[in-house]
Image 1 (cartoon, rainbow, N blue to C red):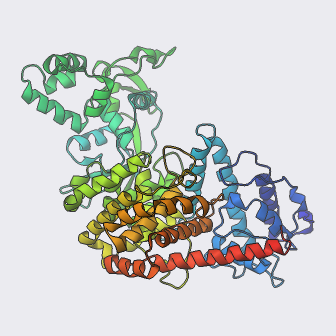
Image 2 (image 1 turned 90 degrees about the vertical axis):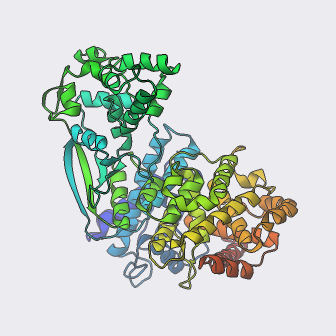
Image 3 (image 1 turned 135 degrees about the horizontal axis):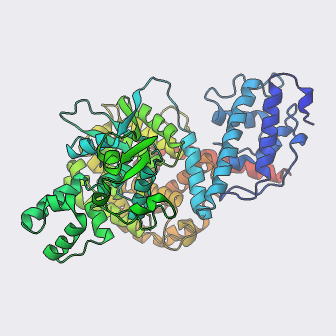
Length: 630
């Protein structure tokens, strides 16, 4: 029995924290999909001087997202080895006392850290359930664990924190020295209502979150890139009528309709400009059209209701320039706030010199302080200089300017569009680079060699993708060749075309009737892609010929794991992908050879190893049950 008063060393508070955290997780009623319900237990019953504490850990392990599941038929030594493979970079060394059971302080600390994160993410999941359905909240919970699993560096970073008046952003945007649309940025997603709320918060004196920018090596040749804060800056530039895209449109329209439309009218009297626009074009400037053209918007009609700020409600910027507001601890005109030198400043994080990995790490840390960039947006920002990253985003449809940022894809334009249309047909939403994540996940499995070191490390999805992209940053990597990148596009296009002919069972695709779940889609497209490397265009015909068998196997053999552990996902992917090769009559040796010849890497040996280890574990589990273990 555990009693904290019996321990007077550094382990006592750690043991108490672990025990109470385990009990807290067990008592939780709102659970992500795949997290099993647990019978509550009392923290005082947990004994750390025997191996019984492992039994309690096993009950709540779903909350901890361990790489390997704790199984009742495994020995204590095997459980601890697998546990600390997840918890510590140096594994089990120094974590257990000589009796092989009792955890040292060095062993308790990483377990306490894991539980601390599990409880925090449990609480965040509960909050997400208030705004999202169970599936969406579960996805966010899994994504948070993936982000937490990423490796951290310790190298110094050249960056500085500063504050800029809004005038600085406006001036640089006007001079073309501020890139609001780097290739890795998502499209404009803020509706006018959200943009109004941002402007109104400024006029109330509420500080904005930091804007993140990347300073160019020379402002004479390149602009500052807006990494995070695009929507805020876009809203500000729209409100004051200074967005560069809007000014360009107005100048073009002035040339087409001289004497009716003019930049002067646009800047000085926007309501009159709206009427002139309709007269000249016959088109009404609705909120949707204005948003598309980055044109101004007024403050909401209910702004400042019941306060002295109500006098500003419903007006455009041009009517408000002389109005006085309290910001930054003093009075200033609205014009001084946005185009002058008032006390209102915007915090800025300016990166001067940093490697992609360093920026990725800091973005993650910054991202955890609020609702900013998601993992896919960060990844796309960090690795956007790689041809393969821009290619994956282009195929996904998440890079609308792909003809500009990836002109080397021109010879495979039809294939790029074909992949995007296939993702539409599969029901994959196009918000926040989710499609890019799926293609990146497949590419990270397909174009790597996880078994090169002899054993396969089953990385989380985020770790797997980042490790793949990190590898491609090396100059001698095969995927630094644009020709090979185009071959990847051709392979993906043939794979999605062949995949569409599979008679996949609804149970395999997922719970939704209209869209696929990520895991079965990744597993099946991986298997089809490996087959395409051997069969080429003939893969589609082979899939059609074996459609009945694919449906049978996808119903009976390729059952999606209920749990969400990384190791289970790897086993499922390997079993499914290799099973598809088997149905299509493609040998693993042929796929191995074809992938190495085409791309210099092959995952086949790793997939075989993962599958065989899984089958062996399943056999052990069966023997354990037959021997009377629960």
